[in-house]
Amino acid sequence: MGDVNTRKNSGTAMPVRRQSTTRRTAAPASASERRDHLVKLAAELFARKGFQATTVRQIAEEAGILSGSLYHHFDSKETIVDEVLTTFLDDLVGRYRSVLVEARDPRETLSEMVRIGFGTLEPHRAAITVMQNDWNYLRSLPGDRFDYLVKVEEEVERMWIEQIKLGQANGMLRPDVDPKLTYRMIRDTIWVTVRWFRPGGRLDTAGLAEHYITILFDGLATGERGDRRT
Amino acid sequence: MGDVNTRKNSGTAMPVRRQSTTRRTAAPASASERRDHLVKLAAELFARKGFQATTVRQIAEEAGILSGSLYHHFDSKETIVDEVLTTFLDDLVGRYRSVLVEARDPRETLSEMVRIGFGTLEPHRAAITVMQNDWNYLRSLPGDRFDYLVKVEEEVERMWIEQIKLGQANGMLRPDVDPKLTYRMIRDTIWVTVRWFRPGGRLDTAGLAEHYITILFDGLATGERGDRRT
DNA sequence: GTCTATATGAGGATAGAC
DNA sequence: GTCTATCCTCATATAGAC
Picture 1 (cartoon, chains in turn brown, blue, orange, green):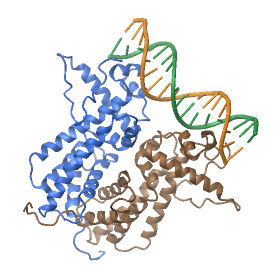
Picture 2: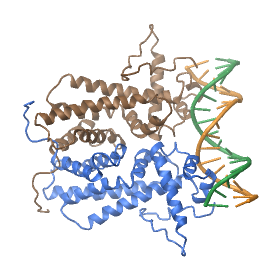
Picture 3: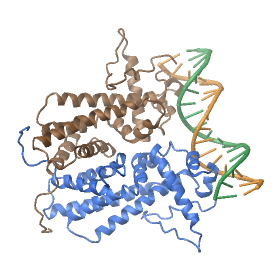
């Protein structure tokens, strides 16, 4: 104990930050890279088997070391999953923000946000999976370590809902849908895709995004209520 | 061991059945009821904490007995979760089938299927949650015990896709969306709702269903591409 | 930075008394 | 049908040598 271990939870309110590790002197970088590599390996295992079902022994084995050695890099298994999630969330929120500062019309902004969501699927597949499957469990752990999950979630929700309301206010979106409910459906639809999305399938994430945007804005119906069967 | 324990996995191909317990003689029914009650308690815990994070001791405690006593009713923790899931899936598939035999126009049938999905949210909230969160883990267990999850999943997928294709064939649904992809989006949107749906909120499940059906068929857009910003 | 060795605890499951 | 008592395994984490 007492090593390079805990890299996070220095913040309090705005939890999404980090990524630029605050490198002290002219550090060798390899330490950080090694750590990142371990986190990646762990993330894959967490995604495949679930956080709890993944043992530190398995993580170590994957890295070609013994479980005890892992504790030179991390002070606990929780710290690892913590880093998996914050890395993803930092990236996600950063992307959202950069779209929002450009402030186009709400429909275009919302489409862009959908594209961002699907766009994170590939680089952050493991993290998203962990978030989906282990959210409840992590939130149920004693302590406030994973409170930031809810914080980030709330910030993202505000971003989406604001755009939806803007769209309704200027007449581009139908006024009779509930903004919050609509947001949740969009959100869920995007993230849950990690369950079945595999790179190299018929559609890439960009294709997925456009497909979804089409249905979302224009609906499945053609307008015809006819039935000519054939 | 060697009791009333294993109640399932007698079948091979068509996995969804059971519920009518094949009561041998004129059994007291309370045995079955007791068992069902225990399954319900366990389901709630599984849903809240995750299958693995839930210990048999917790389940027993919830029931006011000791963990050893649980093994009078079930031969393993897996058997319990198994029963949680099959109970739900039996009901779900049964409901789908009864809609499909009535064969109305595809749009109406699809709407009805959406209603069914949301309709299971309340009675089967715990089971659906478990299925969402622990699917990967259960599937990763050694043995073929949970293979039926995939079997049922495939059957349900066929039902949906057939209706979507019918709708496209007779001109009611836009032909330029991918049926399988569309099905998945619908499916995911419905089930993932268990994450946040709580009975007694602003909308009941029927309201949720109508809200979603509206968006799904008619889309979010009004047609106007204008911006009057008020 | 990794190893060996091990503390420490918890979990699933069993046997047999009541 | 439940309890007591307990087995066995496997988990996270630690201490200190190399």
